[in-house]
Image 1 (cartoon, rainbow over the protein chains, first blue to last red):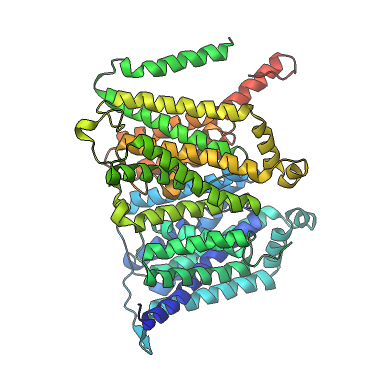
Image 2: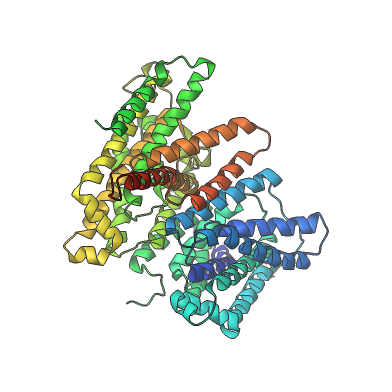
Length: 288
Length: 334
């Protein structure tokens, strides 16, 4: 039997992991909801942002917070590039082609990163204290990442609800034909959305590099998980994705402690599949 | 006999003669590449049976993996002949496919959702194989136990590559035959109707669930067979080469690149992607690790963007347009 204190620690770690996962899922879901394309390579953009932070800190000696801010800019730029170079030429293609084009990007980023930076695992060495609360050990870097992820999501919420552009973006995701009639330019909104989605990847990259070592195949660990969360919450449904992230993170974290890390993922995916059958439109879909 | 048919027979005869031709020092390697093309196009064909009806699965790596691992493990641990092992592997895979397909079709999990659910299935199988490392060798993979003096038809292990060349070719032709039979059947019209609009199809009396499960079972069975043959040929299987997202995406890529609505599309796409990656691998060798894959990924994106209906499909469409013009506006079957 597992010591209850370990279990409690796993629950806390699960919540902290959920914050970052939710950030990833929101970024991907925003893009999906507006442009109606699943970026298979989304988490690989995060990998690139992690590399950006790593090199800015270790090679150029930037302070970590500044590198993190730069990572957001890098992410936004990457998002716009992906949209302009890959997505906009195939906006009218069949969905499978769109999916595969971003799949090609996944192969490209992973192998290009291998070519440039080899498969070494690289981490930014930051010494952050570990907090102890009632026998539970929580690393400060995770707590920080959680807090900043929540802040980033609140910022996204205000952007989408309180600004003119944000409102327009939400309008596109509701009805892409009508928005053009209202005089907004969908193409420009797509670009803004890609930039915002990319910026979210940048935030996630900055928060992940202080917890994990980056390597070219980093996206492989988080990519599928992010898709599952988006589907579970309902593709395009931001609130759903937020809660789904915490559910999945909890299953993985607790399952990892109870059985093994891989089985934690297996259990999470099985739960995902079962839930998909119970509620095909996502756990928060209204029954139509 | 039409010109196209004669051309096809000539090409087939040429393929059948490759193992007999003196190709010099590189002959073993050339056979190896062509065997891989045969087996992977067989898998691609199996995938396109579902893909062409809008059932875009991103989890065929799961079927491939179960087929490969079941066959190899049954031989390694129980000494079961691959003849029987493959049958069991196929049955196991079909069972898995039905477990996934039934709820998917009952609850109308289609489009993006279907793709992502199948992707999850592929990932579950890969992680499960890794987690059961006592049996499966985990991420290091597992080698087929050599049959030693017992090699031959009973164990399906051959010292001579040429035997597998013909096995692979037979499998490929069998896959084409199945595709052709489906293409000519009533099921095709039914599946196309379902792909267009499920509710409308159901309203005219098409049994949506039954057809979907049938085509999924067929596709999964053939994919499992392909996985078993690949594992037997390579005498080794590994969760990354025969399971998981990477493989699933590669299968889909090859098919879409070739053209998924045509008989030879998967073959053209597979031949192209495999030759390309082999060429890049040899050209760059061990310098610049990763550049071959980088160029591969780049070319895939370019192909998808500029040739949306696939290479074979685009060429055929162009030919058809020309024939239509030549015949004074009447459509002609190319």
